[in-house]
Image (cartoon, rainbow, N blue to C red; front, side, top):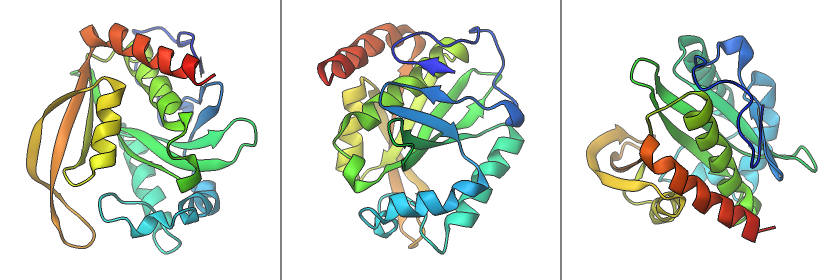
Length: 213
């Protein structure tokens, strides 16, 4: 378990956790809990805040798709390539979104943070900043990653700006990176933070969290 703004409790040399031992990451405002099938109704309720399943630049589960969405994530857990979370407000335990580590590459000590979405009422709050701080801290300080990457739709200006605010570096456009549910052939923008940059990125995130109180 990780507490903001402290260090992770596991050693940096420890392997990526097995499916039965996924971490819970605790901050002051939010907690990231391992995703499970029982989370489906709470995820749909969070996504209904803004009807996020109608977004064209990302994939958010709705009533008809949430079970398959969770099942794919849990398939990734069993394969050792995905560590998915629900994002909860600590004060109320209300689920306000989801995020995950994926494309986990143990040999090359790298992964991607993605599939992040937040209920409309949790957007433009400290929730995303703290969630990213917890995940980046865990990635660099517990999993000993040398690289963490982010990928977002070239059309998603809000997401691109938010990733840059974290301190990530834009690397370029990956053309036709994926096909969206509506059939659009999506171009994506890739960003990364490498281990040498983490201390500066961490300091910047801590300043933002402290300024938010």
